[in-house]
Image (cartoon, rainbow, N blue to C red; front, side, top):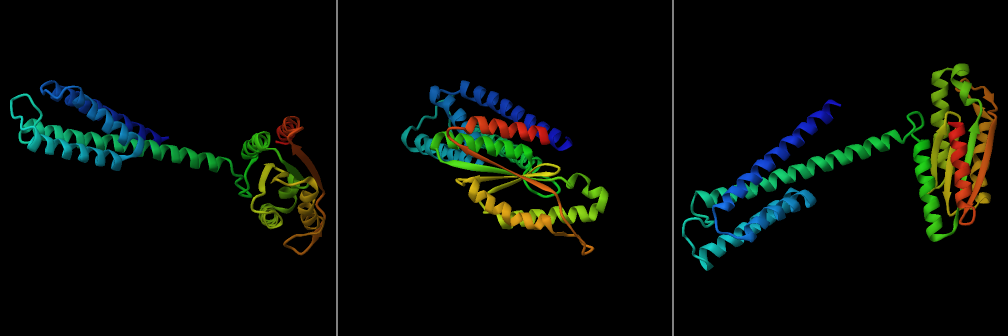
Length: 274
């Protein structure tokens, strides 16, 4: 919260400086006979820096200043009082002001971009289960809806499967925290090994894991579960003792015809298990 407050103060300070700079620029132009073109230069530079960054704004500023310098020096030798010039205090002020405004608006661009990246990183961190580093139920809902939307646009089908391990709700109390963490790491690793990189893995509840298989039939998805099932039926504790973990496997075939109804059913299941 403190960091965000500091960034807010910094942003407000930059905006205040830009407002003062704009007022100074307006006063400067009101004393010069530059016409409408003079009033368009500053907004153009500010917008280029805000949208594309400081480098773009400074590049445009230097280019415009170089053009004006050449124009007033060789093609329009106007030295009457009240005109923008580069050889008096007004011309120097005009030049410095444009460069400063380019830098200020570029700093605003950097600050906003940094804030957006920070929010994105925070959102990604929140969407990850802290014990297995698999995506969580919130990410599952987002990806499920995205797959459904893709299905509506392009057709084809995908499969969603669940593995519910009933003992997980009392595993830690029965065997201790170390054994619990060991199992979660082991199961997460085996889940990654049993699936393709394009298959999305999630922990949607304390005892429930989900997998989204793009462009895959339920029959093909069952192969993955067949690889995992022996690991649960003959799981070896760190003490060397073997135990059978009771588990339940559920499959959903999602296609264009049943997509909306099945996705609603899956979301209802997630809400119930969570």
